[in-house]
Image (cartoon, rainbow, N blue to C red):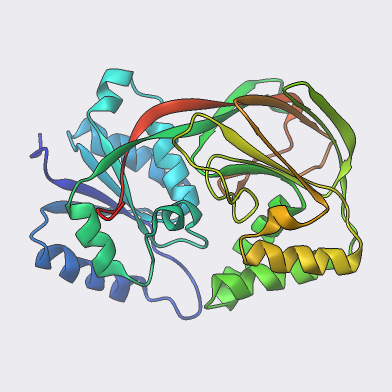
Length: 314
C-alpha cells in the first residue's frame, strides 16, 4: 500500500493541432517536483479508461486522486467513487488539474488550465470541501435501469448537440470560446427544437424547447448561479427564440448572463422529472449519453457526498 499523502494522478492527454501531451506532462512534472509532491502517474489510453484507472488507484491505497483532464474524465472518476462503500469514499479526496475541452467544473473553483503551477500549489495545500452531486436515473433502449452522477450539469436539446459537435471540432481551435462559437453558428439557422416534458415542483411544462440545462454548477454558462454545496439544482429552460434573439442569447451565454434573456426561464429545486422525445440528445458533464433515455428521467441532488480539493484562497 502507498503512503496516504502520495498522489495518484490520472493523466488524460488533450488532442489537437497545437497540443503537445509530452511537453504538457513535463511542465506538470517540474511543478510537482518544485512543490515536493510525491506522486505516481498513469496515462489514460482512451476516454473510457478513467473509471477503471480510478478503481485501480483506490485498490492500491491512494487517498488523493488527481484527474489531469476535463469534465468528462472527472465525471468518470466521480462515478467510480460513488460505486464505493460510503466509508471508503469518505477516506478519499478528488482533485483536478484542468486539461480538457471545456473544464467548466474546474473553472467554477478558479482553476485555470493555463496556470498549471498555481493549480498544483493550491492542490498541495489539501483544502477539502464536501460537494454535492447531481444524479440522473433513466431507462435505456434495452429497458435497463441506468443512473449517472454529475458534478456540473445535464443538458437536453441543442446545447447537448453543440457540446458533441464541439468535441469533434476541438482539434481545429486553440480557444474553447472559438470552438463553442463555431459549433453554435453551424446550428444557428437550423431552428432546432425538441418536444420535452418537465415536472419541476408544482409546475408542469410540456412543449417544444430549444434546450434544458439541469446544473449542479455553472452548466457551461446556462446555470451561472448554481453552486455545488447548497443541496439544490438550478434549471434553465430555453424556448425557441428568433434568430436575432438566438445571437443575443449566445452573447449573454458567453458573458455568464444568460438568465437575463427573455427566452430563458430559471428554476431551483431538489428534484425534477424530464421526458424527451426520441432522438433528443442528452449529455452528462459534456459527454453525450449513448442513446436517448426512454420514458421519464428522474434527476435529484445528493448533498455533500464527495471530498473535493479546492483552491486555498476560497
